[in-house]
Length: 78
Image (cartoon, rainbow, N blue to C red; front, side):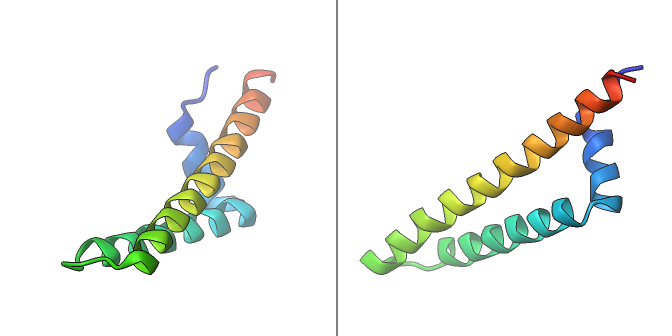
């Protein structure tokens, strides 16, 4: 029986410490980006920080998706 990616994410969020840590990091980067977006003016340091935060957030998201994909394959092979 196929398991949806959302079901796998929920299971990993409930049981996998690495996935939980990655989700927390992703949320932290998102919050920092939202904080930057509320500023009326971004200086060059802020712009560089924004780029770095986006890269980090994407890296974390990619790691989370790899965990989801790996676990989903495990379920499909049962």
